[in-house]
Image 1 (cartoon, rainbow, N blue to C red):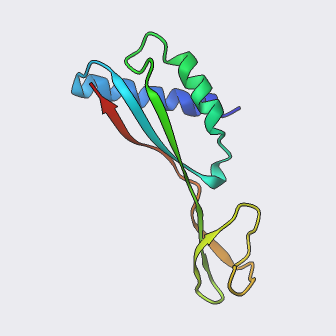
Image 2: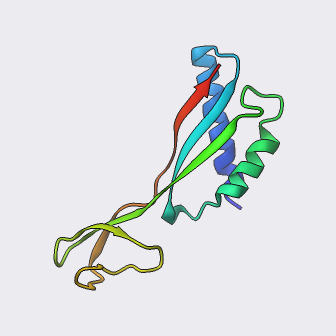
Length: 113
């Protein structure tokens, strides 16, 4: 359910950018979402369509890019991707890993008119 507050944050960024840059409308919003955030893109899209009514972002296409989980193994120094739910090094099977990517969430770009 935290998708609603995240979506409100996206809309807030859109409004702030409109004030700074004085554009007419937003056509496309690209966001990046790490696999570990637990965010559901379809829920973000639904909430965005509801809360963006009568704003500069109404009708904007929301494009979500999922970012993979990347780790660094403290045992064998492997660096690479792992799948969600498998938190061991794929090279040496160690649990001594450091998660480097996968928790991100941000607005990457806006296409405006």
